Length: 184
Image 1 (cartoon, rainbow, N blue to C red):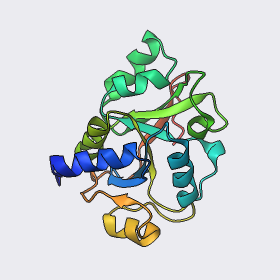
Image 2: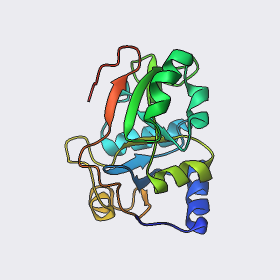
Image 3: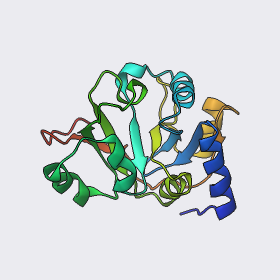
Image 4: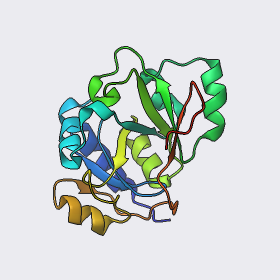
């Protein structure tokens, strides 16, 4: 697994705080991300991806404490999700009422994951926040699996963090925390 310097991580965290859209390796594919509470950054990311806001987005985090402020959860939910993290499992969990629509879409819940990928985890740690995470590809294209594909899709519109993906063949599974149903 490729590592990146502390300087690069601090620099990228500053870019996130300043509203940049970044691309970075995750467990299976490259992700597009930004500060989830920066509406301009999230809308720019959605426009790049050609993804409707109604669908909602995924947040990744270095640990559960970065996700907790966004979620309306109880011990039963924690008992279900915490054993699967960190890892390539995304859960749909009820959102706090204040969470913006640009994150939840037309839902009252939020897709979240504590990432196991060391670069994605480090980006969340250095940014001191959860990050938006959606596959790095325009809506009708296959997800990018390396930095070259990200550059082909988005040229200079995103800041790319180079590194190897985690090697998973499929994007992360998504489960509904209330029913346990696998949605993807």
